[in-house]
Image (tube, rainbow, N blue to C red; front, side, top):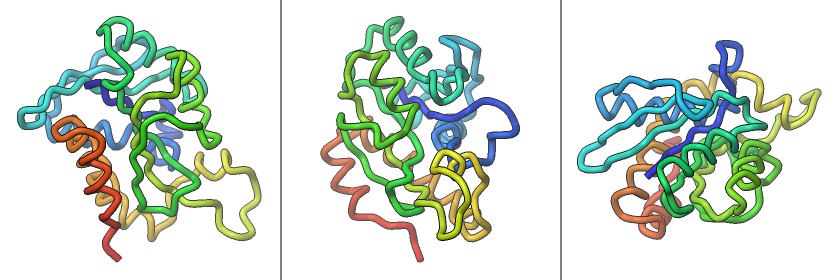
Length: 192
């Protein structure tokens, strides 16, 4: 299974909402004993084993809008089917802390998801949608401006738990399949 975390390269983006996908892939790498990432497919790639689950982890370094180039290169090289591809991304249409899983569908304005669907020729891959919420009232700027900002202090306090839950979702998909993972993840909420 290929787990792709969407984000933007560089230290200026590392702590932004838009880099949640990178954070989840990094969490999976830590759980696998921190295998080394190597430059490949216009991104950083690592082979990981979490328990009995073998994963290939990918962080595209093409910037969000061009993520599909990296994903398509990896999918072609490994000869993967769409149901073996899991893309983890931030989701502005979900409240902060909510995680939703799905296969296929639209991109909800996420240009990284749009790029992946365009490059793969289909939107029918699995997504782990990690909620970052909508901009607060009075926010000056677009949704894109909002996701390129850092987390609010209250969100930072919950961030490690949110990232761990999203990594759990990836593991569940790999071990038990999407339907079972959806049943479990969609019932759980971030502790309040």
